[in-house]
Amino acid sequence: MKYFSTIFLFFYLVKFLFSQDIQKQLQSQFILAKPGDTIHIPSGKFELTKSLLLDGKKNLVIKGAGMNQSILSFKGQYEGAEGIKINQCQNITLMDFSVTDAKGDCIKALNTEKISFIRITVAWTGKISPKNGAYGLYPVSCSNVLIHECVAIGASDAGIYVGQSDQVVVSGCEAKYNVAGIEIENTTNAEVFNNYAHDNTGGILVFDLPELPKKQGGNVRVYNNRVIHNNTKNFAPKGNIVGQVPSGTGMFVLATPRVEIFDNLIEENKTVSIGICSFYISERKFNDSLYDPIPYQISIHNNRFLRKKANPPMNNKIGLLLKFKLGKKIPHIVYDGITRDEMLNGSGKLKDEFKICIQNNENESFVDLDADKNFKNITFDLAPYRCTMNVTKP
Image (cartoon, rainbow, N blue to C red; front, side):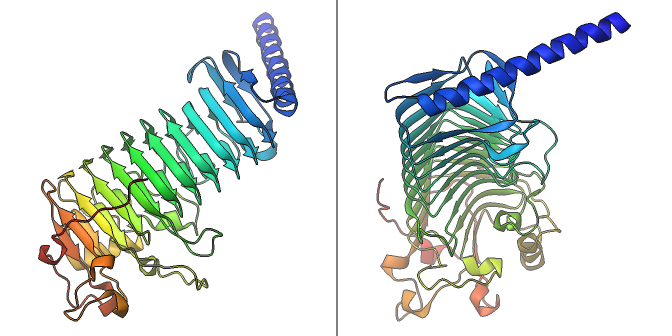
């Protein structure tokens, strides 16, 4: 028995020392890299204890042997918040490796022009928990972002998050067991397509939030996605805005203008297939005169909805609201109906520049909650929303 314990200890020490050597090698390569270099992550699982930092670099590729072959684990991390942090770089490609169990975000990119994540897995490997890091892939204040064929698991905020960025493509990805599978926030000119978002709290979110440097997103197209069974209990840390998303949410547009949602398969999300709401529905105060909290120019067409009747979550304000007002008969598309006077014409309908259009969805049903008039005139009538519009293609 003592012999086997010695052998085990020996192999553990070898693995630890090799992991530390890999960490030093990678960080040195990050520091010394020149334009045109490819930094290779070897095959194997490596236990890293500090963030890897890439700062001010151009024209680099960071490449592993495969998503399941090159694994950087930060489970024992004691220094830094991110697994990998990229700042003020240009033309960076990360591909074919995994980052797991970071103390904070798995991979964060800041102020970077042209960054690509290709076949990257980001995950927290234990049970879902509010102690998990907030974001898996986290480009913020970036431009020309590509996230392709990536996998995100277990984030306590969003598995794949793009914030305050411009010219974005998220395609062919899988997001599961996150609070938000994919989130596009205060971001312009984004295309989100051919993704599979399942078993999250909310599948795909398009949010604009106040008091951020970039005030408004828009020109977002969400299409050809499978958004299925996003019924995981919300496990966001207390106080997070995403903590207000009820479990059972397929897609949610919050305050963002110019959003087109089409050709998606949205199934078995028990609370709502698509929500369209102003920031006011959150009941949070804000102090930002440049922020517009009301969504407009929203086009929802040619989607397929399917869902069994079920109770929304009773531990969530929005879920309680829907249960109290609608019971189990919650339509697939829920609109809070909050507007401003200048958005309406003489007949009390939305002017063309502020309209919401809903057309040609399979199994579609709809409710306008009339939330800004204390829910006095809740209506299920889709006639005022039968229209088409051109949302600017990114």
